[in-house]
Length: 131
Length: 482
Image (cartoon, rainbow over the protein chains, first blue to last red):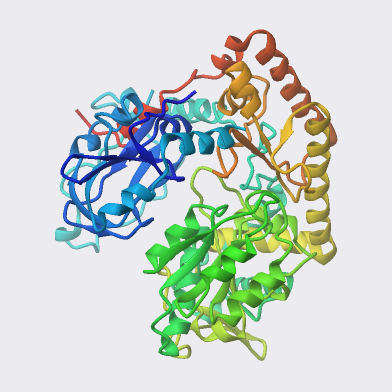
């Protein structure tokens, strides 16, 4: 079973979102997603300053099995990216919700976060996937 | 061990056969190299042994059943090779005038005509040097078509989520934005999602039919109508042409452009990176944009048309006319089969796949699309084995090598978890197909009783499990002298 922290929000495409006190969002991929992908060998993070719409592909993750896009959960501007992933993509495998974060976003609309799935709803998505 | 690592400085080896010396007196000094090239200094015997050993390590269609889904690893008839190696073909210089290449050009022209006939397209160009270049050519023509009509708003190419990764890559290389279309649980394109996605921004859709899921796209006419009505064009990825060869024509399905992988369907050698050939066929409206040189026949003379005669062409794709040797082998293969034989290719390719599907289902393997008939390939999913036994699709694939079978395609298409994509092709005997299924059943038994046996495989090959993470992260492809 994969780990789904209660305090985070999620997307159907397996990104997790954490809201910081200043309203910015930290985004990564879930434990379930990293399990599906297997050992990661390459991560391309979005550039700070770039803007994305909701559901735009904004990062690329490659494992030994597949290449996969990461989708921007809500519209906004990237304020920081986890550059350390370039040299150590396996960080996402080892610590998907911690050091494996991918980028930080300043959302266009702060309310958009509340529209994302909570942990229970995401657990159902994962259960369906595993069925 | 690399042949360079066997090199010893100063070792020379006089030629064992008379040498045909080439005079270089007329090459000016400034064009002659001053230092010796970095070549291994080994004896002829060492070179022979080195390459013979390498060939013995090869797991190939010549030595093993190779049911690698989506790749159509069929037998390459030796006769095609023999005839393509006739001295008249081998020694033809690509810069020799048309008048001295009429025989070769006649073969190419006939190939062009046969491909037109079997795909139902209006015109064919042999120029693309591989499948990926064929794709690029196809989408470049779609772009040129919209540009010539000043239809600048068309910025998107639609690609089903089941597609080969080359499709979105091609669209991006042609400066399009990719929009993904979902697949329904029956393996068909989701028509409602397609209707919602098309519009004045749609340049076209790239489809593989049968799809990578090993099923025929049943609503293809509706898909064609939806995309055409929106002003977009239809691109046919010829990856799975083997399933419908001589039976259904992409032209009749409403496609505007198609690329064919001759190295798959027309049995030219492949694997190991080519060379391939990816001719393109087009409908009437894309005909002016075909790449050059394009072969024409005037009276009984063959002639290469260039952009002088074809001003709207997207241009040249390589220095010459295409991969001559590959095209020749495909031509000979087509001539050996004849029109009747082409029907039989797809009949036996689909029969073999459906026979395997039925036997694997009866043996308890889980099919990805149990309600669908297979085309020339089908998918089983190992998700139950992975979850309950801890033995995944890759473990089965590796263990198959010990049993003397090349593994099917693993983990593609991405839509199906823990999948094996199995394509027997029409050239396998029933005995070989049965032996493969028996091996799968034996591995299933091992997975249930001694899973570690399967997880540690292979045991009988020159190498055991490779560290594919390290291989991907620390690419080490070129030898450099120390």
